Image 1 (cartoon, rainbow, N blue to C red):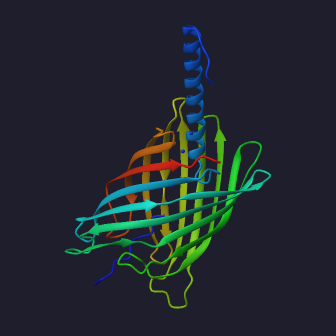
Image 2 (image 1 turned 90 degrees about the vertical axis):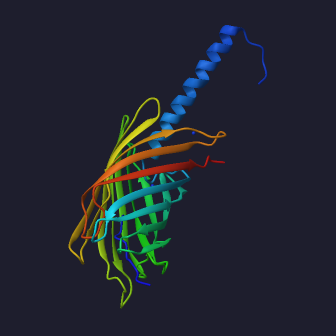
Image 3 (image 1 turned 30 degrees about the vertical axis):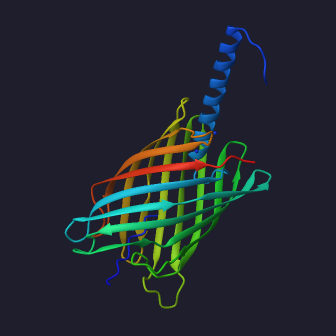
Length: 274
């Protein structure tokens, strides 16, 4: 079977007797506290390396792939975020991205599906008193040897810096990976940069504008999607879930890469502490 190596597309809540007026006041207070808690959590989730355990499941829909621009691709990313407190405003945050890819007619007349290469990221992270968060650490790409895998081990370094200013969260995440084999099936040297800016409202809606750009140093080609999304925390059974819907546009992509518009949907289950 002919294999296709996908381009690297390099993730937030007594029993007593009351008079009617007291009851209403308590309801309003509780509602206000819940809204404030949701707003605070929503803004924390705008930070890609927030010290919050969460289980995001993301779906990306792309089309116009392949030599005939008739290919389609659905990518489902499971990307759990697990933080470990190190004290003194420091933490170790891990994020593992496990993609399942289903594509048709990227190679005309064929289809491929399977788990794509797994990306493991780890950041040593600290937050300063003026609400600047930074993180640095390793990144490893683990091949799955499926029909949509590069079959090549790769690794490198990753970093992030962001600033919280009122309802705004802004920053950039980046990494660079190289192949780690003497005779790689897919020679790899790629840089990824993700600038982002988010605005969280008092009703816990978060608007985010971001790009997830990759530069392939081997092919000297850019892949640049521009994404806009809207997120809202809506708990189910007392468990906070961040619901996200967005659309994007491929500003540029390699030959046979996706073109035009794309869609993204995500739900992010937040695991409460304790």
